Length: 403
Image 1 (cartoon, rainbow, N blue to C red):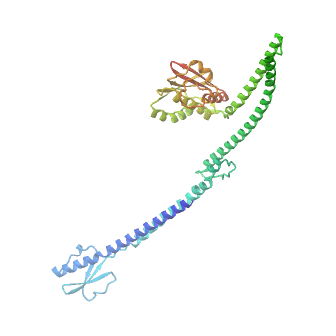
Image 2 (image 1 turned 30 degrees about the vertical axis):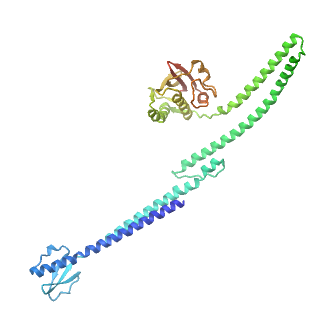
Image 3 (image 1 turned 90 degrees about the vertical axis):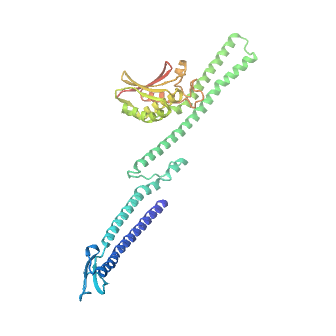
């Protein structure tokens, strides 16, 4: 706010200084113009002294020349000159640009009023609302989700404040979900830990009995071994429950399905990746498709396609990425294909598992969640995703329901 005030003062002061300079120049111009008649009057006197006559047309600023008894009797501006031993009254025109100066100053005042109005407008509808929002991102970054966010109805900040409010609500919901999830997970782990102790104790007792040779009967030994195996199965079940609970974090997705044109999704993807791929020398080829209406969450479908293209960029050979389209059983099939696939066919059933990374990752960074998220999102939208390898090309297809 202070910086804007200083800017306003500097702008207005500069404008006023320029206005003063302009007025000084106009006044000097008027004085310079009015002094010309003296020069012409001197030339006129020289002509009369030398020739005894004069041509008034040669002196544009002089209007009349008189001599005689009424030498000083005139309502017009004049000057008395002496030429050839006689006195002459020389009348001249006076240049008066006071109206011009007044007009210029009126225009300058109007411009100053316009500049002041624009500055006041900026201050009221941009600077002050922005000042009220200035601390909000900082407070959100500190975790203060209760920070007051004033509503702004202006067209400049209305959508911004609405978006920040949505962001704050989303962060708050995520935090609540995280706390609830952590609480539930902790209770689950405590419960499972307690449940594991029972079969684990039984296993230890049976194992000690076998180690000490307490069971001489072969049938009893077999029964004890079967009991150990049963208890081990129970522990394996509990471990599966723990693994499932640990992976539930990545399954918490919100999907809002609706109708959207296929062309909207494809245009969004190509607009984002075409320039980037062109710079890296990768050809992005988009096949022909008949525009149709899809039933899906457009943002989530775009997210899936982005994940697939990112994988194609990361694990392909950088020559070609292709989008192909087909229809089957009331669904649109969108295939993302890239050349240079080195993934083994036997790994295809595992690539959609969480944290799984194929043998072709090399030193490339990643967490093995991209395809897992795609599969989960497509399932929530009532669709499917599958992959295939054909002649060194990795094809992965999204199956999207038609509206």
